[in-house]
Image 1 (cartoon, rainbow, N blue to C red):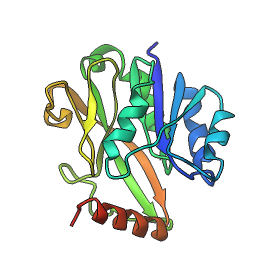
Image 2: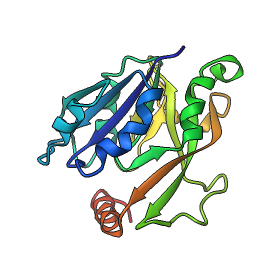
Image 3: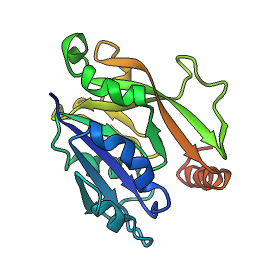
Length: 201
C-alpha cells in the first residue's frame, strides 16, 4: 500500500483547520503542516492531531509556491496530497487515493481533481465545471520525482525541466472526483485584494 503525505499550509486557521482535517486522517500516512506565523493557536491545535507534524516557516507573502514547496520538502510519503485549510476532499476523492496508486493508474505521475467553490454556502463556480475551463486542481502526485510548484500567484506543478505537468496528458489524469472549497464573501474579498497586490488584474 502506498504511503501518502497530506501537506497543508496555513495562518490563523484555528476556527476551521481541525474540522476540515479530520475526514482525511484515515486515508493518509502523515500530515505535514507549515504554519506561517499564526497568533490564534492554529499551530498548537495541529500539533495535537494524530499523524501530524508542524513546521513553523516564515513564508514569502508574495510567492505562493514558496509555502507549498516548504511543506513538500518534509513529506516522506510515496505520494503527496495537498489541500488548503478551507477545503475538504469528497469521500469519492478520498477513496480513490489508494486505487490510483496501483495497476493501470500507477503509470500516471499526477492526478487532477475538480473543485466546487462555495461562498457563504452558495455554489460560486456554476459555469466553470467543463474542461478545459473547470476549476481543475493538480493536488495528488508522486513524491521524489523532482516535482515542485512554480509561479508566485497561481502556482502550477512543474517537472525538473520546468514544464507544467498539466500540459503532459500522458503523465496526468483528471479524476471524476471533487474538492469542496468553502469560504465567506469576506474571505473572498480579502483573497481578491491579495491577488491584486500580487499582480493579478
